[in-house]
Amino acid sequence: MPRIRVNLKGRPSDYGLHPWIFKDKVKGVIGQGFEAAVYVKGKFFGSAFYNPEGKLALRFYSREEEDFTAGLVYSRIQRARHEREDILGFRGAYRLFFAEADNMPGIIADVYGDGVVLQISSYGAERLKREIVEGFRMAGYRWLYEKSDSYARRQEGLEPYEGWHFYDEEREHVWVEINGLKFKVPIGGQKTGLYLDQRLNWEVVARTMRGRRRVLDAFSYTGGFTLHLLKYGVEKVVAIDEDGDALELLRENVAANGFPRRAVDTFSANVFDMLDSFLLAHERYDGIILDPPAFAKGRNVSGARRGYFTLFDRALRLLEPGGILAAFSCSRHITFELLREEMTRAAKRLLREVKVLYWLHQSPDHPVPVYFPDAEYLRGFLALVY
Image 1 (cartoon, rainbow, N blue to C red):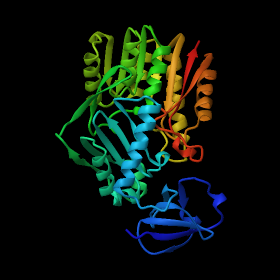
Image 2: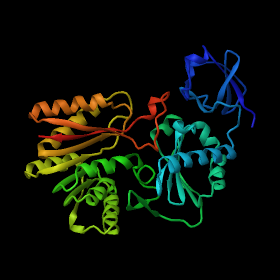
Image 3: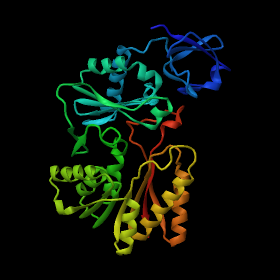
Image 4: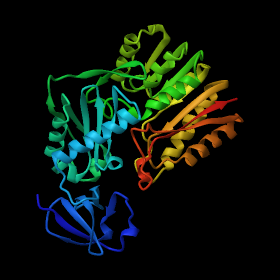
């Protein structure tokens, strides 16, 4: 496919290896299309997806002069497999492509057993979907399901899409093993089926809370934290989520791993409402996990601040002295400093002593290139509370 030529303003050093170029940096465009050969000062600078309508005009997929083909996708799969399986030692389920961090702009792919759930959120990748699908066929996966409904996709002017590309047999779920635990993953569930970015944090948090008497898992989804808490000997977990179907899967996961049903109480309800109800009932916990959905989609974080302050306030009121609090944000606009500030405000108001034990990050199969800090989005902390 012939590629258009895009000339950029300035010098190569103005851009480095950042994978994005915004529209105001484009000096001129020759031709029509969505694959571009990019030049700066007359010298080749990279191959990119081009979106003529968006503010984000270019997304680099290579620094070589090459087309985006099924063969390129296949070679990227092999490299990503090596990084995840051979270097990180991940098996069962993991993020294979983390979009720009893997030079696959707007393409997220999560492996679940012998298949993949795909998300596409860039203009160019949407138009080259046939090549992407063929690359996964070539790599030998037995099924490929797409769940493309992200906020980023809407920003590119793309409609949501969900459905099968290929399969050996159509399925509604798949079983995988992570950290020695069995998970039933819904194909087409929230995100791609599991919150794989918490893979290491599940272990760190549960190991630190080991042997606790009563732990609250707020925004529990299908039980990533709950199962790990039970694995490390927590006597009782109270799991809250608005998604009743997710809680049903959580109960199935508890049973599949041989944990007693009585070890978990589930509540399908609004977390904020339930926390207030627990306060009125004088409930107390020696561990609390707060893993809410993104409170901030854009740069305006005022509403998110209020949300986190409320969660921290309620958690500190419910925690016994010596309790442990784990809290997370999955919005790249929420910094560690913001979390610290809202935690400090709540602690000062209630005169509680809070000691941060760990600052927590996304799992390493969601890597953050040094030239692309936007790839960092999951932030959290684990703290001891007196």
